[in-house]
Structure formats: C-alpha cells, structure tokens
Amino acid sequence: MDVSYSQFLRLTQRRASVRNFQAADVPRAAVEQAIAAAAQAPSACNRQPLRYIAVADNATKLKLARLPMGTAGYAEGIPLMLAVVGDLSAYPFERDRHIIYIDASLANMQFMLALETLGLASCSINWPDMEQRERKAAALLMLKPYERIVMLMAVGYPDPAGLVPHSEKKSVEEMLTWM
Ligand SMILES: Cc1cc2nc3c(=O)[nH]c(=O)nc-3n(C[C@H](O)[C@H](O)[C@H](O)COP(=O)(O)O)c2cc1C
Image (cartoon, rainbow, N blue to C red; front, side, top):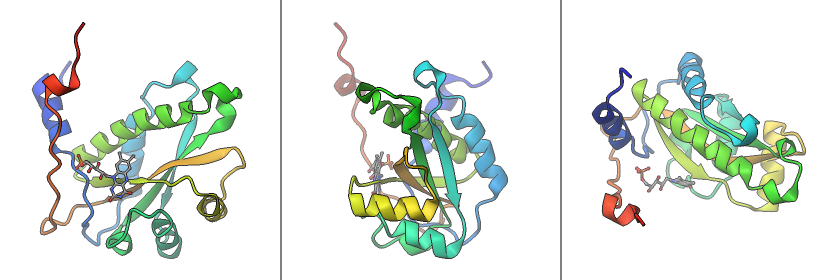
C-alpha cells in the first residue's frame, strides 16, 4: 500500500467542516474524482443505492441551500451544493429502509476525504425530515418518488481568511470498548 497509516490519519485530521469559501467555482472534474472515490464504498448487497446531484446553477443552488435549517449565515456563499440522494427501491422490505442512510454515509466520508486531497473543503448539512421541505426539494431536484435526500453538502475552495471551528474529538479510550 503506498498510503501509510500516518498519511491517512493526517488526511482524516485535516478534514474539518468549512463554511467560508472562496468565490471560485468548483470544477466538475474534481467532483467526478471525488465521486470515483465515493463509488468504492461498501453497500449492502453492493446495491449502491445512491447518487449525487451537484447544483451549480445560482438560482437553484440558493433555493436548495435555504431549505435545510442548518445553513443560516453561510447559505449565500456556498459555491456548490450537493444533494446526496438515496434510492429506496433498492431495498424493497420496510425493515431495510434505514440502509440507504448507512450506504450513503459510508460513501460520503470517502467523498469528503477525496475532496481534501483536491484542495476542496466541505460541510455536511442535515436534511430535516419535514414533509413540506421534502416536497419542495423533490420538485427542485426532480427526484423520483422513491428517492430521498440523505443529506446535503456544501463544497468549495476554503477561504484562507475564514475561521474554521475546532471540533474536539473523542479519545481512542472513549471510543473503544474491548471485551
Ligand atoms: C449528519 C450531519 C449533519 C450536519 N448538519 C449540519 C448543518 O445542518 N449545518 C452545519 O453548519 N453543519 C452541519 N454539520 C457539520 C457538523 O457540525 C460538524 O461535522 C461537527 O461539528 C464536527 O466538526 P468537523 O466536521 O469539523 O469535524 C453536520 C454534520 C453531519 C455529519
């Protein structure tokens, strides 16, 4: 393996949620590279029940960015909005309806780390389970009836002058129970 553990650890330590971006556009080629990494993620039965919708168009992007409640104060400065969309038709049994959220989350982490290697930054954005907003987003993004937004993501080149909150992480001892 030509990626050492310490290199990989440094990559994970470097990623942080960024909410202040440069005005520069995000190249489609970079998003495609990050998606190539996301596509390698495991998924239940390898069904890969997700896709990414990248919204660069200004008017649509702003409408989408204002729909979740977690973008107050920075929605207007997001260069690219991504909707991570799960496909419920991949898992027909009700008991498996949570799997799109697991599969998409595994892919998203790979997506975000790949962005870091390309000099891009991201911020995950919670998608609230609220009927009216679901309907608005479905119309805006032309979702199929069996598709659900798992989360949104802001993507862009970080503003070097912008502040990034430090988020303290749990220690290994707090994270691990070994029985
Ligand atoms: C599922 C999820 C939802 C999140 N929702 C929001 C959000 O709505 N708005 C926001 O500014 N940050 C959001 N975040 C970013 C978190 O606040 C951030 O990941 C956390 O504070 C840890 O900081 P770090 O990402 O820099 O390690 C979300 C993160 C996750 C994983």
